[in-house]
Length: 469
Image (cartoon, rainbow, N blue to C red; front, top):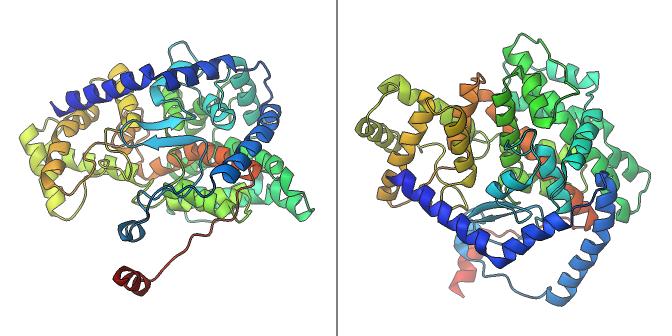
């Protein structure tokens, strides 16, 4: 079966990676270097000078080293495969998938603190890891969680700004509008207007970023309750962590849903710097736009159908399969429906990726969650069947570099199971998660003094003339 072959291959890849001495030492270093200091800001302050020197050395000793050739295909093909961006917090391997500061998703699940023994990692722990490169202790994560709760109060004008929009406006429109309204509190903007030295840019950026990360779940939950629950807002619970509180404010108290939200936020937080939302956030911030402006721009990129909106499209497509073929559809009928979709000029949502060439590990960990918590869910069974049916068909087409499922192929079914059935809202969940990765890297952008991004563009005439030479 396709599914078992892919999982088997993924397991071999993981096993091989774990046995590599470099990775083993990296994980060991992360464990040994963990400090008892619970102040994230002071930890960063110690790390930054060392990394600034590292960047200077890299530039002075290797600045002229070529990283590859640029082809016409790359220029015309969305810069695919073109190396041109520094992104410290995560790295995406086409075969292995994402690594957060060198750690794979299974390693993060094993090493990062959880709310309960054997549970899913707390997003606060991943934020600490992304910023410091170190696995935090439970005490450090609890301290960061408390700090985020203390920063989470959203000014009234933000709600009024959202309320000025039609209630029918897309959830991402309302969410991005709310983030823009938060911008008036930007510490970076105030410090810049007062003439702060560029060596200190990272400090108000840090303040803005942590406040933004703290506030986006509150804004997102307000949008959800406004649109789907008659505006009945649920306040934050000071006893809950970041992911559980988000689920609570949305209106879901099931402990399993809280666990799902911890996992969801963690695995959606970062996916290196070349994707649309991450790159947009970095690009806008390179102009010294503050974190609120930069993240709002990132959200507008995330709202596109070819990026974050895909998770909404997956569930809607799966429900269309059920509506036409029934929940207990045979493999043959499922194949026919997939071909029908492809022959109509559409894609099968949730399959393929711009970089990955194997099953997305973010898909795999969600499947493992489903096997543990909802093995008999009909839509989960449908997702499993699609995993067996879709890749061979895409391979048969011969036009697809990656026929395997990505993160979006599974998340909607899990959310739907626990009652979050409003598919139009799903990209907002993605947006809340992505704040962690984008803001963590943005702090390092300012700490390292990364410059304004300004690549060179050319015309088709220029390309034609160059190729003739």
